[in-house]
Image (cartoon, rainbow, N blue to C red; front, side):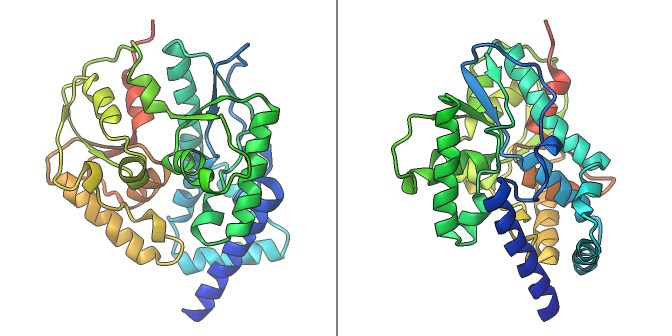
Length: 314
């Protein structure tokens, strides 16, 4: 146990160094994250992924293996000059997660919003620095990130991950040296106001509210409105909305077995409703719930995927 904790600390410090050096928690080059989407002239909005769907996909792939084993193998590969992440990032799981922001881009542009994307500003938001108490690092990092926004003329940012939304919209205000006029908008706010049409689907679904999205940011009804526009029967558990329970992802890095137990419990809670599909709107919720799902469980899917499958393109 003590040796495993030391390995985890090594990886945490490595991730901190990666974020400070390159704006990426995994230390990978921009090409691994750049979205293959059309360039939009004179955009009003800028899509910000925070690279978190890519990161969550990689973590989901790693979760297939026993935790201490994957830690030791990963550290050994690094010692002999091989980066395991460059192998994992090419997996089918990561490909699925990487496609989610691309699908959101298509939904937003299909709804008539002039949205652009540029890897130059789409960096990791620095969440781990803040959450693990590297406050001096985070303060410098978040100020540099908002300087990038300013220099590129970014005024309205559309976020997809709850963690990016929280850090850019709420947490940053405490640490920015200069007041920012950048507007942070979660994508469900835009799509719920759009005229997008969706194929009607006669299935029963449950929506797992991501903690940060529901409790901290207060985005509760917008995802539900979008789901209902697909003609589905949305069933609510007692532990939903601002009473939502944790998916288990926050403790995965330090207590993987506890994390899996929490995720399994959450699936069982929603499964009791008799639903066909469990929808969520967070890359880390999606990753941990998917990693423990069984063949007889409801399908686990991201809200963007759910909407994109039913979108009637005109």
